[in-house]
Length: 481
Image 1 (cartoon, rainbow, N blue to C red):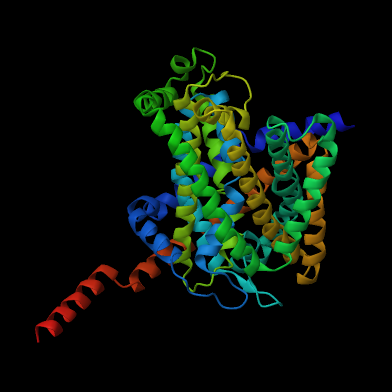
Image 2: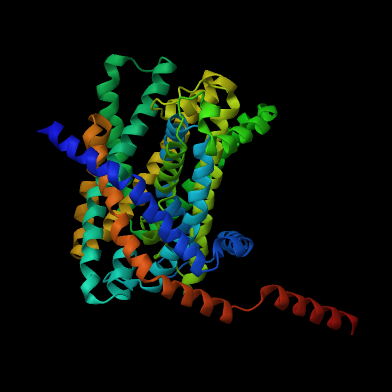
């Protein structure tokens, strides 16, 4: 029976994350890019200035909301996960270095897709009975489209609930457990015989922490992620940059292999990865899976932001994809390629390949720090997806259902720490991919609304540089007088 379920799921999964689905995701991203005149490129400096500038503001958010910075941290908490460590390694092994080039291409279009998702989420959000701002794909389907499309909102929410327990929780906690146990075994703190008890203790501890944070509401989630995400990102970036600096002489050859491998993987991988389409598929699918552009999940967190300007918050979506894929995923790839670790092209690989890149450079002692990084990445993902599941269950039923759901969601951490999750992970991965379908349909239909909102925003947004120059001149005149 389980084998039959697994076979059926594998068939669906191959299609969902296969070429047809990627063409749809890329197609919608390209459509949005053309309609907005590639806003992610022509307004990229503005997007970085707006997002970085708002990150350092200490303004408190109103009740039921979080600051724009906390919103992007909550979204990044869910997207920057173990996939940035294990997923990139897998793409490299199966698609060759050229997969990184196609990952960049998918991120370029994904920036505009995520921009549109966040903009629509803020535009069509609601205030629930507890006074919290709620939004996301199910809400911009409900409030942006006619009633004949509302069934898509219900479908999206159901798929979201099915996904959060596996993709967002159990598999992430399993990663945390493995990382901690391996580090403790390497330092002779733990023996193989003690593993079952250690797994249970870790599972219970994580379940308690997740419950304490998620049951505290959106403000507590925002406060935790605003502290955790910058720490874990900086921590990982510093470790990765150290590897790159120590192998700086390898950088030119690495980038040559990435660009050459994108169009001629046969020449770079020794013929093992000989297909241009394989390299493209692995890179694009890894990019999509990493930054979640097209899935719509990140917009659920952004909808909680205390802002009255949908487009302004939309620029955080561009920043989010840039941070996740262009920065973190690229650094992971460079760590593997620069360090010179052996890559068995054509064979599946995971976090162990990335960890090998660090340990071959720094030594085995760094395994404790890579374990910390993986734990932070995975735990933050659990928190982010907990919010997504909460919003999906609330949309289908009511806010009264959210606390029981969060209790169950927290307890799933114990299952994730103690059980084999092969089939659960596979089914959750499929449900995650299925969430793309209703979201892409709506993005296609509402693409004109996104364009209109962008035009209205830049018509009303004052020229900050001109205003600053005028103020400086005024002060100069006053001083002269």
